[in-house]
Length: 298
Length: 182
Image (cartoon, rainbow over all chains, first blue to last red; front, side, top):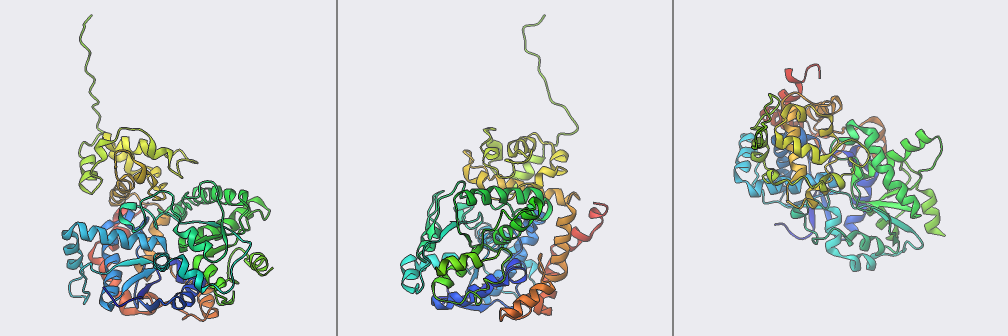
C-alpha cells in the first residue's frame, strides 16, 4: 500500500523497555539494507497475544487495531521485531478481514477518537522484510564474514504459526532464517528439537516461571550438546527468555553451565557488515558476548 | 435377568451442556470432531514436564465440565506455541479453544495474580512491560531517546489507550469486584 521500503517501526514492550540493544541494532542495520524506519508515535503494547488476548479478546482486538490504525494513518506498513507483536497484528488483521462485524465493533470503540482504520495496512516482521531481500542480497553486503561460528537458530512460534495466516512456505521445516544466518558466513548448526517453543509465551513465563524456565532449559541443553557458539533469535520475548533463563539456571545450579551468548539477527548481521559491537549493543547482554566476539576476530 | 443393556446417563449438576456451544460460537468450530487421539498432548512443550494434558482439557470441555475447566490451573500452562493446532488431524483450533476458555475463566473471576498485575501495568502505562530506571539508562547509553516514542512519552496517546480500555470494559474487568480476593 505504500512507497517502497519505508515502514512504521512498532516497538512493543520488551524490546524498548528491557532489551533496547536489540532496538538499536535494528535501527542501525535496516537503513543499511535500504529499509527506512519511521517511529510509530504513541503506540502501546501490541497487546500481547498469549496474555491480554487470553484475558479479554475484544480489548486485545481494539488495542491491536489502534496500533495498526496509527500505521495506516501514517501511510506506511507496520514493521515489528517481536514474534509476539507480529502474531498479534497478523491474527488481529485476519479476524478483521474474515469478520467484517468485528471491524465495525472496533470502529464503534474508536468513535470520536480521530482514529481512521479500515484494516488495509499490512504488518511485517523485521526478518520477513530481510528475507524478502534474500540471502544473496545480504551476502553482497557482508564485509566481515562471521567465520568459524556455529549458530543455534531459533525461529520462535508466533513467527511461523498459525501457518494458515503466515506468509512462509507451508512446511514444518523452515530454512529461511538458517539461510540468512549462513549468508553472514556463520554455520547454522543442527540440533535436537530445533522447533521447540522457548517456553515464555502464553503468560507462562509471567505466572509459572519454573515450568517456563524448564522448557528453555531443554532447548539450552540441546544447544550445548550441539556445541553452538551462540543462539540467534528474531523475537524480543524469546530473547528475554534465553538471556534471563540462563542466569536463573546458573544461580540454581551454583555453577556457570549456561553461558551461550544470545544474539538478535540484526546484531549478527551488523557484525558481518562491519559495525562496531558497541553500536549493536553487544556489550549490554545478560550473557557475556565477549567470548563469541573474540572467537569471531581470531 | 434381562437381556437388554441398561442405559447409563451421566446426570450431574457439574455438566453444562451449553459450555461447548459457547466455545464453538467463539470460534473453535471443529472442537466436537475431537477423536481423543492425543496428538495435542504429545506435542505440547508444557505437557512434557507437567500434568497438563491438552487432550483431557478438550474432553472436559466437550463433556461440559465448565466450572472444573474454568477454575483449573492447567488452563494457564499453555504457552500458545500453536503446535497442537498445527498437528491436530481434525483441524481443531486447539490453541484458540484454550484462549476462548481463558477468556471465560477471567470473565468468571478466575485470574492468576501475576496476570492481573500485568493487566494493571497495561492500564496505567499502555505497556504490559513498562520501562524502568536501568533501561532508561541503557537507552541513553545506546544513543536512543531515554523514553521510547510510545505511550511512555505521549500523554495524549496514553489517554486514548486508557479510554479504549474503559470502553471495552477491560478496566472494570481487571479492577472490578469479580477480581477481588483472587
